[in-house]
Image 1 (cartoon, rainbow, N blue to C red):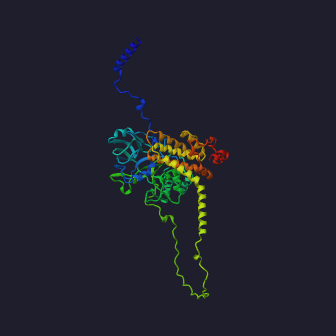
Image 2 (image 1 turned 180 degrees about the vertical axis):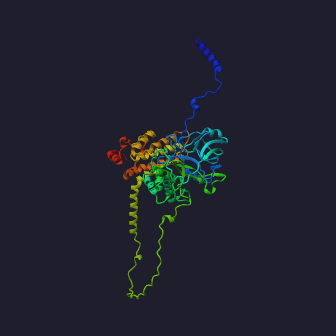
Length: 563
């Protein structure tokens, strides 16, 4: 009877479900809800400036039709600096990270000349959408028009557009924009700086404020101060992308690179460094400034029918906010033909006028003593002294042997650490290269005396390193490593290069915070090499994290023995 009841219930249930099943598909909320848009998920485009210039100098990234004369194509606007990179901020409404869904009634308060501008994408592959002026509406066309329209976002405060679906070859769109007029210096003569809220700068070089104050010492009005900063860089600096055949100019715009630019006998760089330097100096003086990356044609090509954007006409400039004029662009980069040469590095010769000298008076002949034959044998006729040569060779070999023994620990340990770094840097998976960069930072910090613990998370390690070296940028790098490793997409080569560049900058800063003898001990330290093996050294006490290097070494004699 029990079996019969179960069988009957199964037959009835199947029959009823056939009629009661819904005709429409079943949706699960977690499958259709789109997560909130976060612009900080994408790397700053300014990090890829030199790559665009080097790899796409002649490639057609995109073409623009209907671009008014003197108008510029904006790719991104950045107003936050953390000592390593200029990026968009996430500080709220009005910031460079405040994006909203694109619509048809944007930039309602914009003033200027109306223009219809069409963009056709070529080799550009980016989420940053090129635009011109203040955009009122966007119309996409092409095979991916619907995807682009659904994922398009726009920031009215910075006039920057983003398409999270990504722009690619064949995509096209038309903008209805308002192109603002650029005011002259006479119109800005009595204008004050606008009361704009910008995020606080971090990691700015220490001497930057003094350099900026010296540059604007003779300026009295706001526009004169900005022009003084611009002319200090554009007139005293030299231009170079650092490509083949050009003067050496390192890429990047971290604090160390900007300090090198302003502290060298000759300032050598390109738009990436000069725009960053001017914006940082302006902010140190309380001037509201931000960095913009984009494209614009040369003066002889402005106003043409079609503008072709490539790496050769990519630029970065600075915008400063004035009270009644809005954001005004300034170009601090020296002209491309202003390059360093031997004449600028060597002192100029100061030749003296030639004076005809009178001839010397005649000399009386000198009476020489009679020649005496020298019966002594020449030293060169003696036989070769083999004993002296053997002694010299023995001393040289002995000295080299002693030197080799003294340097052997440095060489062996250096080779092992270099091989470990190369293995991490060239890992097969992109995410493993990011993880390897973080491991390299932790190992170098451990050799310098940081009490890191095996098996700790990146955030835990970041807390230890921040306390040990007073370096707040480590926490930002740890968060970035987690995003790159556990994110939905593999990090790009540019992301990996930028991450390792930040790692090297932090390692250099940690080394400089230690004494010479502590850095020497770190070179010979095998703690990080033994980590994870049965010969691993016991972990350091976390109580040493807040001590200065000298006090920590004095208070922990066992650490010296372990090293």
